[in-house]
Length: 165
Image (cartoon, rainbow, N blue to C red; front, side, top):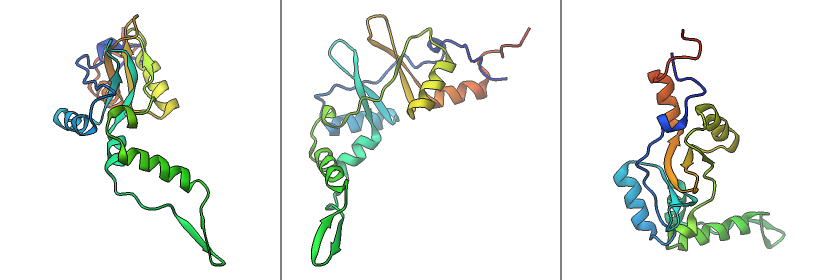
């Protein structure tokens, strides 16, 4: 059973997409994700075009208690470990952030409604992401497909397999 690889995404996408705006306060965005039981949402501009993705990990980082950069005590001097300063300043930026735009990241790959389940699975695997935005010809977001949607489709056998005659 399972879903055919060439199943178009518009047949499995969620078309009621919860989106957030970059100027939205982080607390409001966190509440929106929680209310809707979702782990992330596309960040869109006024025209509904995707700018990036807000992920619950962004929110966790923004509210996490920060630890000072890791240092190495050597011959009486405290040396910051390489890369720690940069990581700490990124974490500090996140912790002080007030808006979605300050913590969002831009890993939201886009596909069209007629692209296939196989296209979505390939992108998710290659880019290590859990969701793909579905956009129309004007590049406005019209749907979203998550890894869970793909798995559900396979389990429920929404579509007959390719070789069914």
